[in-house]
Image 1: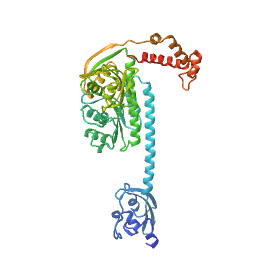
Image 2 (image 1 turned 135 degrees about the horizontal axis):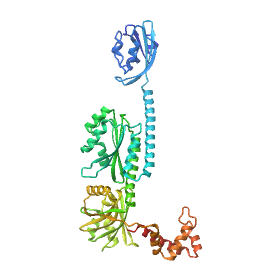
Image 3 (image 1 turned 180 degrees about the vertical axis):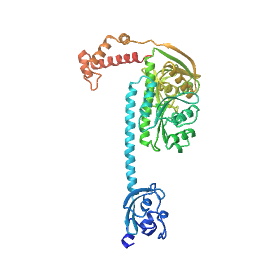
Image 4 (image 1 turned 90 degrees about the vertical axis):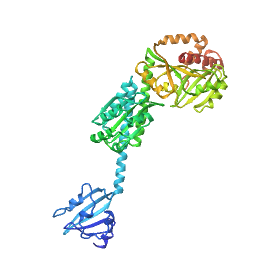
Length: 505
């Protein structure tokens, strides 16, 4: 080999007609990871094998044809670009390391594929959101999720499970769509047998769970691993259907690729689960809102709670006048003490760890207390119930809630009892009277004075409540020939009566 080839930056191998190496430069030795004198050694014993073994195939036979190719060689973990040039007594083989370019191309392609998959996930989420807005029941929501995910080419199948809220925290299969094979049957049997599955952990931990590849994930039941191997299913993702601190169920999505769910895709799926969880709660609230019959349940509070602690410290009874859930793990409670002062209630409340803040509302004679974290009151509200009244004393407390009729009420009661130290003291169905729009207007009119109704109606027609306002307070006051301060006084009084009529028990 002349000096130029010997010093070449690419590998050069001179192969004799009998398939042995005649010459080899240093670059080639480094690329094929070979040491020592290779003269006379058979090519098959020196050159590493690739999946296709194109180089060894090209050198076989009586004559060698000119060819070029790129292949991956697992034993040396390199991509090599190989060119075979025939010679009178064999061939010359030129070898170059193209691993960096191949890795870059693969990274770009993987990013493009991930972008395409994420776009499809987002498209699916939008489709699900559009359909969920129009659905009126939980069953329709679950069918929509399974259909939109299970019919996509990216995933093999999808199934939806509903949380039973029993003591074992099990799941009930509600819908499944796609090519399930033996895998879903194994998943169903594992769930029915109370085995720990990624879907079960997603519900218990309220977090997305992933197993990829399934065969190497010890948290997947062995029966599911074997069935997935036989069906060619390699990845799965479990998405909790959550709203606030409440998890109602789970979606399991299975795919035939070992790396089917990237971090970005998991985040999109997590958002999908939150949208679906909100829709489930909204459907439950809609059922409660439109139902002529509700299930009234009275719970007694057996364990410690912030409001009971305040009542115990002050040796008084606190009556809940109303509550408003806000954020995902907090609730504003408006309480009135039976004997203690409002300031004493505030001072006692703010020293309790689960209380965010407390403040006195002197006009209404109540105290606003923010409860943070998981509480029975927040759980009932998140699950679609309405707290009608509640009271807390040194010896305990109780709260009364309206729940959707039929099976939803049983699920909610089971969920609250399994999570908190409460007991059911009474439960019965009752008819709920429906207030018509005319009855509402008549009742409001009876509560407003003539002047208050005139001021409120005029301000409304003059676009005072629009944004931006069509009229200022001064302009409305001039129209009524009253002062601005008088207008605001009547507006506040009439608005308070309007809100009291709307939000009353």
